[in-house]
Image (tube, rainbow, N blue to C red; front, side, top):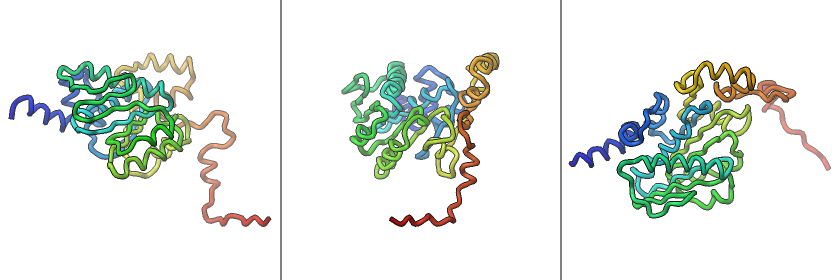
Length: 253
C-alpha cells in the first residue's frame, strides 16, 4: 500500500485527521466529536458563531469525497441561507491540496468524478421532493424550517438509510427542531454555548447583554429554548393542561 493510499484510508475513517492535514483549521473538541460521529442522526444546538456551519459543510464534503455516488442535500429556510452553506463547502474544497475532479460546478451544486453530488436547496417542499436516496441531508438553521418540510424530508432516508444532520440556534419552544432536541429519541445531541467557544470573549457577551438584553443572549449564545415574551401562557402551562384520557366531544348536526 502506498503512502497516498494509506492516507486516503485514514482520511476515510477519520474526518478529523483529514481536516487537520488538508483544510487548515483546528476543530474544537465538540467539532471533533461531531465529525467522528458514525451514527445516522445528529442534532446540533449551537450558539451563534460557534462554527456549526463549517462543521456541517466539512461533513458534507467529506461524505462526497470518500463515499462515491453520494447525494448530499443542503437545506435551509431560504435559498440565500442554503447558498451561504454551499459557499462554505466551496471554500473548503478550494483549500484541498489534492482536489477531486469536478464534472459540474455552479453556484448551487457540485458533481464530482466519483459520482457524488452536493446540492443547495431552499425550504421548498416541492423542490425537495424531486430528489431521492440522499446519502446525507443537512438542515441548516433548522429551527426556522417548517414542520411540513421536515416531515417530507424524513421518508427520503427510508431506503438509502442516509444520515440526517440538524443544526441551529434555538427559536423558541416550538416546531420540530425543539421537539426533536428535547424529546426522547435516537439522535446524537450536542450543545455548544458561548462559554465553550474560544472565539467568543466574556467581554463581548457582557456587551451583548447591555445591547440586546439577557433574553436574547440566553437564546442566541446559551442555546436556551426561550418562551416567547408576548405569550399569555407558558409552554409548560399549556402542556400540563392537556389530558389525553378525555374523550373528544361528539358534535351533532
